[in-house]
Image (cartoon, rainbow, N blue to C red; front, side, top):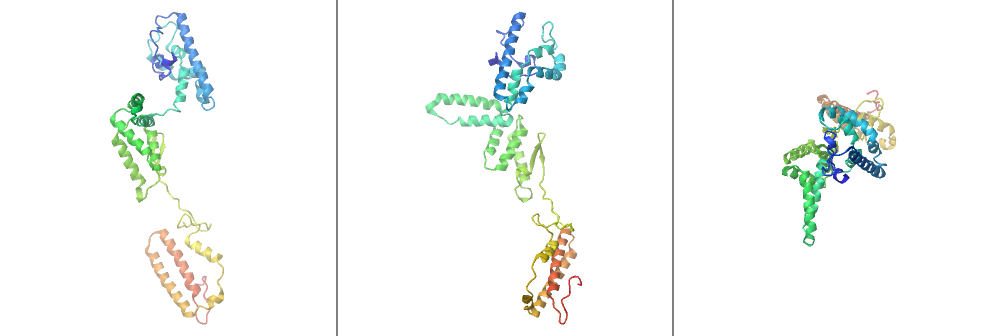
Length: 357
């Protein structure tokens, strides 16, 4: 009985949970009450024996699944979920005195089979991944081996049968083959994208045209802006649907608490003007003797050159409308002003301070 039923999917919307019974061995219409009771005891024994095997092997890692399929807990659950549907759909089932549709379905509850199938879903491939696995198995066995011809033929027949049943049509087969090629490529980003695609695609068949359209769209997204982007930075999946997101570098504010300017580069701590001031405070004073040794005409030329550059910066700052560019020009102008005034030396007079200027 178990050998005939254990591979079947249990369906609560079908009579007998979709289980098949050999009519030559289980003719329920002709059974006496004692024979039917013995059959039910055999069925219950089979379910408990299967649960015992599953508990012994999977209790540590799949405890919640085993607990959910305890016969008493599962009976209450299926009654809440399916009792109304059974009463409305199974109008003539069963044709037994004293039985209601719900009582019959719960009496023959295949809790062992249901638990086995729930655990197996966590380990079996499904959908696109299942088709890829079966196609891979078929390709692996295609290498012709004349020294073991019978074994080769047997392997081909077996793997081809599974691969043929996994794909719905020739075009679906071709799409699965192309998907497998991407998964076996050396590009990590494309492999990641394909795994996400197979997860969302699931059991739904897809055509070569569908796959090509998705690949082209993904490639455009990756190369937007002229530079390839990481797939993980562009595509995320939520509720079975693709969601796009853009990575944005949030501008950083100057480390000077009294300043709200944005730094020019994320790695910088200060804006240009604060950095100049900070550097001026932290650098040691230059040797006065070295400064004194600079000829006056060189000082004056340096000053004039700095002032000419200052005028150009001020003109650029006047013409530009971008606040970020204006901040940069202003910082450069401040630095040039400090250089020009700090190196000037008029005859008979001391150097004018920055504050006075």
